[in-house]
Amino acid sequence: MKRQAGFTTVAIICFVCLYAPIVVLVAYSFNAGESIAVWQGFSWRWYAAAWENEEVQRAAWLSVLVAVQASFYATVVATMAALATTRNKAFRGQTAVFALINQPLMVPEIVTGVALLIVFAMVKVATGYNGLGYLVLAHTAFCIPFAYLPIRARLEGMDLTLETAAADLYATPWKTFRRVTLPLMWPGILAGAMLAFVISLDDVVITELVKGPGQDTLPTYMLGQLRRVVTPEINAISSALLAVSVVIVSLFFLLNRKRG
Amino acid sequence: MDGSVRDIAVEAENVSKIFGSGSDEVRALDDVSVGIQDNEFFTLLGPSGCGKTTLLRLIAGFDHPTKGSIRLAGQDISYLPPYRRSVNTVFQNYALFPHMTVAQNIGFGLEMQGRSRAEVRETVGNMLALVRMEALANRRTSQISGGQQQRVALARALAPRPKVLLLDEPLSALDYKLRKDMQIELKRLQHETGITFVFVTHDQEEALTMSDRIAVMSSGKILQVGSPRDIYDRPSERFVADFIGDTNFLEAEVAGKEGATARIRLASGVEVEADLPSGMADARQVTVVIRPEHAALAPAGQGELQGRIANIVYFGTDTHYHVDLDTGGQFTLRLQNPRGGRELHGEGEPVGIAFEPGALQVLRD
Image 1 (cartoon, rainbow over the protein chains, first blue to last red):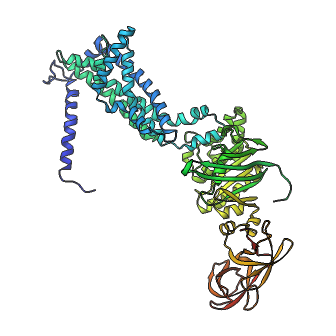
Image 2 (image 1 turned 180 degrees about the vertical axis):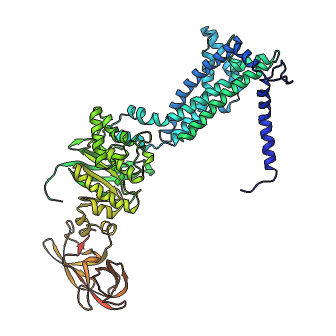
């Protein structure tokens, strides 16, 4: 391949812009001092502080609780949607269905957030329910396309003759699904679930609008903290969240490559 | 065929299959009736799009007939789902389950039938031995060669001991040498298991070498059913004669009849006796066919036809002579090469062509 003049330079600038702030953020999470701008030596103190901070604990636990439930429901729905849109012959309005399923990718998050806020307010008035269900439901909704895409990709690469062969070998439709379709689409389902989990874990905008009192997730808690005194504790929490996301996304890519 | 009366394993009765509707309508099968006997190696032969795979899919239950019925051992199975028929298929691309080992693949059908663990293990062992794959039982299907996958696909389909085994062009993905080996292997498996095989192919050589009987198909119809020898020596229609082997077509007229035998006057004026096919009793103009190896060169002036040698092509085992006929058209002869033989004729030489007695076949069209 021919090298384009200046291409390398542009690439380096892009990478610096992308990663320098993150490097700075992570570096200052180890600052011994109280400042997020003046280096005063290496220390784990802010990680310890974050670890012992009960509010952080509660927010982190809530994040995981919401992400686990939302990614589970989203994956179940996405699996059914993927089966419906790939197993059957092309039907009228199929493109419209794709667009509908992937709607959360296109509608601005703030719009979804405001819409949910209004509808949930009505529901709250009508039912009096104030629990975590709203957050789980909202997260499930915007996680569906992220779970759907890898599952559908997996299904599209699958040989339909395998299901015909199973039926030929006395497997009922349910047994065919259990013994052939599901095991073969499993890597896609896992990948979809992981992606949905990370997306739910990271969400700020919709959560900020939908959450009830005392329902801070880790990201909204951090947002709240930023409005007050900023210490390297916020760097430490950010770094930890980053680490979790990186690990899960890496697993996702590994899973897609290994079985793809 | 050995001539004895055998039970019918599969029977199609007036089966039509229409795909699509209106102007997109495709008649994949058009009023097909055929009976396939027990313990028979039966081949559906025809070019792509002739309906042979559609008929196979109807027998397997992957599609259902638009009209007519399919019977398996006397029972109407036209609308039975595939998992309720004692019919198994060897797929063109094998369709082995990639997430299972060789042994798990072979055992799948038995497991689905609800056989006991011990029985599954025993049958899988027998099947592995039958296709000589014992050493690879625990391999993934992606870790074995194409020929081995073929054997696993066969073993998997044979393991539940179906009444009928369907094979959808299973040899087309193999290279020439392996294909030859598998042809012999398939014949052996059919003999050893005694299961009825229904084999689909577009390869006439495959059909001729392996089959007990062949059904030649074209445009959704079965044109002729018979033993390989019947089909080759006694083609009833132009398509069959043309599709299988090389053949010479001659226009002729019926000069007289004695019972089913007719005197056929060739363009050269020579009269030859040949059987008239049924339904052709009133025919005047007919097309007759004769295979290139069923005629010999004769001195000029002798034999049934006269001409001049246009060219000679040497093939090792035999030599092909293309003769321009005096009455127009060309005639091909294929003569065996004797040991130490040499060219007895030269290009441009006038010759006669002598038919073997009874070699002439009248077509039904």
